[in-house]
Image (tube, rainbow, N blue to C red; front, side, top):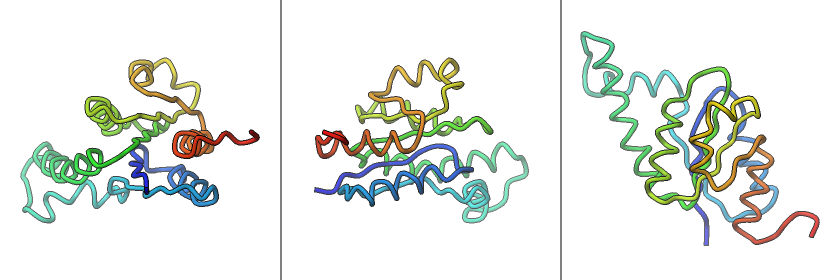
Length: 152
C-alpha cells in the first residue's frame, strides 16, 4: 500500500525536497502531494482563469477559492498531513491546512524551528508529532509507516 502524504506550508526553502528525497532513500511507500508552490500562479489563478477584478480583495478571494479546490481535495485523500511553518513569512494557509486536517481526523505532523514553539502552541497541540527538521519528519514517517526505528 502506498501512503499519501500531503506537504503543506512555506514555499521558500527546500524542506519538501529534503523530505521526499529522504523518504525515497528510506524506500518508504509514499506518494507526496502539495499545494501549488509557484507563488505567482497561486496568487493569480483566479483572475487568470475567471477574469480580472477591480479590487485586490476579490482577486485574492478568487485565488484562495480556486486553490482550495486542490488543497481540500488532497487533504481529504491524505493518510498523513505534514505542515511546515517557516520564520520568514506568515503561513496563514498552512495554519488553515493544519486545522482542516485535524478536523478531518488526519494524523498531523508539524515542522518548525524551536523559536516558533510558543506562537504555534495551539497548532502543535493538534499534532501527533512536532519536528524541528525535515529529517525528523522522514524518521517519523519511517516509524509510522514501517514500524522500524533507525538503529533498532
